[in-house]
Image (tube, helix red, strand yellow):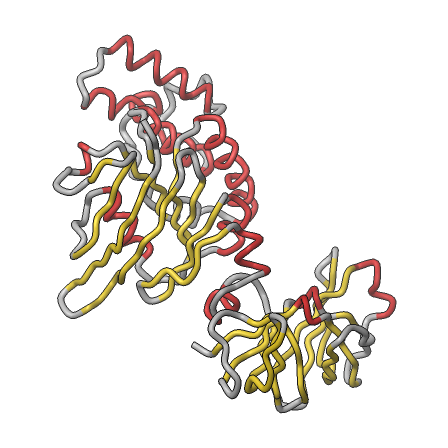
Length: 355
């Protein structure tokens, strides 16, 4: 049976609040799919609709091609991991993992065998008799995943499960989650507000804003080819320069700005005379000029980050500019307090309509 998840024009209204509006996308069988967006954008509401905890106001959810309408959460081929993990503190790790199996009437010997297999899978063999309070945050996270996998779901739903962990442990758990998903072949739908988390782990990402899916694509596509101004500004660091579109030709747009004309790839739906912004990533800016476009900025500070430095400057129109300089080129970093030129290629910038 397919483990795909299909949302068809799903909407959700709470009273007068439109939490989710006309959402349609398909999560492929065995895919690691993330829903990324700021707090309050509707991503958790969407996950709860898939899980069956909420019934959508309109639209439908299909899992493996089967309409989930009317099916309670415990009747769906899904399992959900909440941000709080919700492990039972008085149960052992083994008992926590086997809890869902016991609820389904699985015998004691089979529950134990399955729990031991899952302990091996999450690299916690020998920890079965411990209590959750005796484990580290990362170990508890793995136990919650094993408990969800014990009931053999087709789809695992994860609601910001790493948000309570410190940075280094989050980074470690990203790699573990990704590897675990590939080993099991279970379809993962992962909720996060952390863009680096979504970009690092996912096959594809849906970016949400105010209840609407702005764009669905592979991480590199979202970063390099954002379809909307929200995606361009939310996914990764970027420089924004406002202006009006003066020319469109051969897939490129010329933007008249307060600091002169600039060119970039034309985003969808642009028209001459339209208010728009040019977006260019810090790493696309080359100190000393060069390239088809040049920005002049008063350098205010240079922050050393180890492998690179971030030069923060102020453009003539008062807007901030950030350029990333590799450590190998720090000897030629711009001087603080002086004006410096930063160049970029037209192909490395995109012009998108204001929205």
